[in-house]
Amino acid sequence: MHIRSPRADLPQLPPPASRPSLRRRGRGAVSNPAPRFDALESEPFDDGWATIEDFTDLPPLPTTLIRDASRSALSWNQSPDIGFDRAVNPYRGCEHGCVYCYARPTHAYLGYSPGLDFEAKLIYKPDVAALLERELRKASYVPRPIALGSNTDPYQPIERTLRLTRAVLETLERFGHPLSIVTKSAGVLRDLDILQRLAARGLVRVFLSVTTLDAGLARRMEPRAATPERRIAAIAALAQAGIPAGVMAAPMIPGLNDCELEKILERAARAGAAHAGYVLLRLPHELKEMFEAWLSEHFPDRAKHVLSLIRETRAGALSDARFGDRFIGSGPYADLLAARFARGLKQWGFAERAPLETRHFAVPTEAGETKAQLSLF
Image 1 (cartoon, one colour):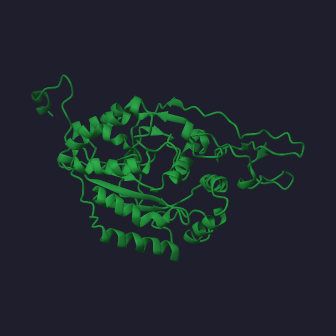
Image 2 (cartoon, rainbow, N blue to C red):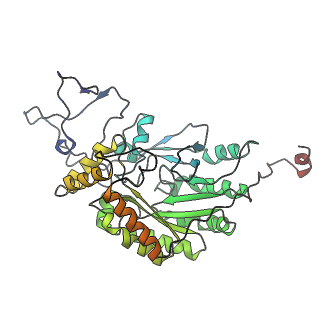
Image 3 (tube, rainbow, N blue to C red):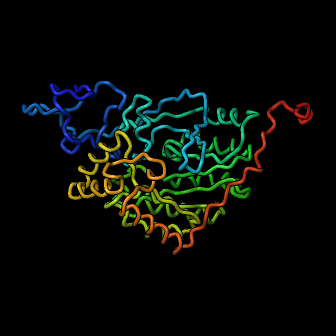
């Protein structure tokens, strides 16, 4: 066991590439680092007697569901480089297992690892729709678009049975409240009926996140997300149903998938996507070490090159939290990626995102109330 604060009399942790892999079938992360707030951290250590445990044949890691007792459904932000100020996340942690997910470090706030814990220990909010309704009914509430899936995917596999995202959509529809959705799942099509009604009033926009068109690479990076082809097909189905659809080419990873940017934009546009966005890979907190370990496991021949390119776009580091730079990076490589994206927007006719409607918002009558009673107020 190692103390987190560095001391000269204690052995230092080995670099990520030299530590035993915790790779599990169907999971993205190959490590499970301790939360950054923990004072103690245990690490496998080879003492030379061949006593270190062999992790190569570990059984599949089951998913554990943990009930969330939060008293609020809405989370708020004041970030100047984010296009929304409120969000709803029915789930914390994500079974899709995307190794690069910027939300992984948030699991540390719950006392869990951003590694395998993030994709196997899922926190769900069973009362999310009721909590949301209570907040929307407040006299002080001012409607602005809600982001659904800003932190973890609202259509990850457990949504098939828990249906919490659908419950949120039903609440927002009753209130006439605008929202945007970002997902990697074709499961969004299960709610096509609600989404069509919302779209008819200008209340919704749906983005499919397409990181790569290479099914093999996708399987390594995001093992339980829908295949790239299914995501493109979902864009087509949404557009055909009259629902404003878009594509997020995110994240673009220098030297790994950024060469696909133009092709992703082309395929999405041909499928009917009207809007597009992209994000350059960012690696906050524990994600730096985790991504380095994953690269060394899956792409040992190019790991150093990829990490070098990332540092080139992040002022010499693996992450840059500065507003304005954190999503697009800086330096010549990042500038070239931005120019390529701008050219793709023009070439394939992607449109500016029109504001979602807020004029339809109205607090519905509660059971037992009458219009006459409400008129007294």
